[in-house]
Image (tube, rainbow, N blue to C red; front, side, top):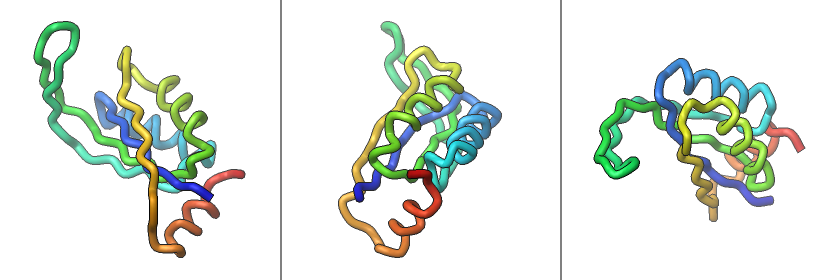
Amino acid sequence: MAYCIIFSTAGSQIEADKIAAALLENRVASCVQMTPIQSAYHWKGKVERADEIHLVVKTRDELYPKVAEIIKSNHSYETPQIVKIPITDGLPAYLDWIKSETKS
């Protein structure tokens, strides 16, 4: 079984909470960590700065399409960050927990 972490951001804590709740209610994530961050980025020809909430989603690789769909459908950004990072190794008990808390 393959596991991954998905990184995203949200424009507010309210939006982050909404995304996290949808992911957990649909059992496509075992955990969503949310941390306030400050971002600087290029957008439409300008350098922008924003306070955002960084989302770290723990899940199984096969659930990525559903996670991405839920993030997009609950997101206010035109182009939200949705990046999948494979987990190449991990504590077996932790990976088993991810498996047990996500739907097959």
